[in-house]
Length: 256
Image (cartoon, rainbow, N blue to C red; front, side):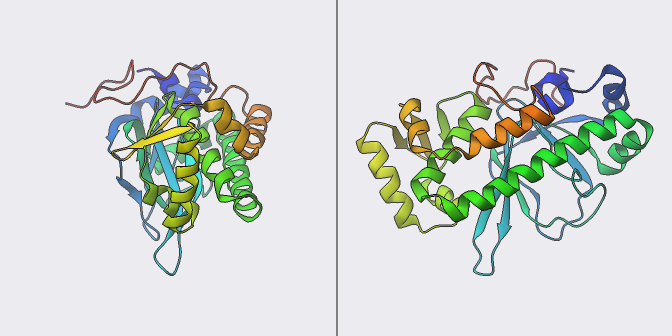
């Protein structure tokens, strides 16, 4: 099995990987699949592989779900910050389909008890994940819809290694917590400038340099923190992650 398909697993020592390996199973995540709803007991940890993405969304009283974190191959979903099988606070949804490793939170906790270095590495990741949520709160309060939309697209592209993102305007509006009409104007403006195009539930970016110019610098701030706390785990432009397909990443055996 190829642990480097998930960068957090790939950062572990061989001894620590050996503690997790007997419990890790491949799982094909489809777009829109719900990993947890608010209040669900979190009994499974998911490690996105390759281009797989998970969106954490906080549900509001009017039914909207506003994204607070986007988790890709740099991390894990479930039981990381809470250290155990506790109720989920946010809704975790598969945003970009692909393969995951998954294991029980109980097995992960037992492994962390057995290995101080494993416990430290996951504590460092928890710190990075909280930092991402902090930055998201500040971004939502201080930056324009256009800046935030550009930031989200760049974060998705960093993790998938592709120029196409499976996304509708309704989904983007929901994740940013704004009305569809606002997103429509932002997207139309970017289309007219040749930055991107939309087609059949997909956004294709043509001008990455302009998208970066429009975006706020929140992605860069999160990346710097990752690089300081977990060097080499955050996705980079030259990772060469291939687009999602029906086949697992190299080294991951699909279940029978």
